[in-house]
Image: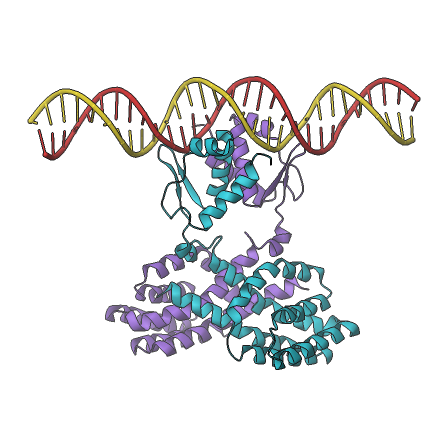
Length: 225
Length: 225
DNA sequence: TAAGGGAATTCATCTGATGAATTCTTAAGT
DNA sequence: ACTTAAGAATTCATCAGATGAATTCCCTTA
């Protein structure tokens, strides 16, 4: 096993901070300590600390040490690297952007793509009927629509969100949600098949709205007591 | 004038990259070059480059050099430091957060704060009548409400957005908008005065909705042809 | 002309030195 | 005992310069 160096080291320490292994305001090991511990030069640790500083995780103070400035409960104010932005990004982004995609798809989709979309809605309906977990089919449905826009750009943006989308699904476990989703998927698929871009857009909006509301509600209630 | 060092250097170079003085994909000066130019040690430049790397502005490649990975036209996909996120942040943030503030203010505001809010709505009405520019009074109104929540946290968040709010006003110059705004301000002030937090929230939502719609519409149309 | 093999370039990491800001310790004075 | 002030120790800031590794450049040779 080769010796741990800059990039790996950065990741390790960043993760530890995010996991709050050092609490907000507490001191990180001194540069020399950490250098000795990991068998690297001081300058390497220094680069790591600078990188963390530039991301806002720590503050380096001459003569004092390096203290943690990251706090999960304050993520809301910092706006950067914050779970609020994550949430805002993922939920609001979808609410804002996917209706446009749906509209575009209604205009641009090829026949076979429309078939796939319709099929996906049907698959999901059957799954829901059998009380099966529909999340992956749900994701597929939305992805198919993005594909059908024939807009590479859109697709790239959307795929960038996959990881977060997966994490997001935890929020969408409300009773009745699945049935609602099935219904909307069918209507959206219909609208696209009918080349009705306006309706596709509106339906997608309505479909995504509650997701956003739920997540945002929970978040704001928490943040502003 | 003292010699330029780490922090200042970081800011200078970051700004230059953001201003696209080096284009996406182009090479930055070598570490030694830059060190010589600014009369600092290589290791200091190295720290700067690492900080930029960790923010996603550059990629450091052994043997090759350091290339710019920041591109304004791609900001949309990277999600960080992007004007899209700026807009999303500011418009959607308001839509999501300010109704909560209004509700909170309705519960928490002191008498004199309610008077100020009511007064602001009235001032704005008069100004609109005289066809004067109402933007600053508009900002004041919203700020007063945030103040009236007595939630330091909320205030801090809100004030962080001032700069962007000012830039935002360019988007809200639609005919009939001002009259609508005046009307809403009055109703919101009323709801708060009546301690009707639910209505305050709903009215604020309705008040902010079109802002968000307009900005987002223009943006998404632009982005996805 | 094409291919191969150094030479030059550029980043990666290390060693170790000096200085600056802060904190800790200790001793003197009240 | 308590306060204060000086010095020691700690910790970051920056520097100079060395070696190694990855890449590119360029010249030689077939």
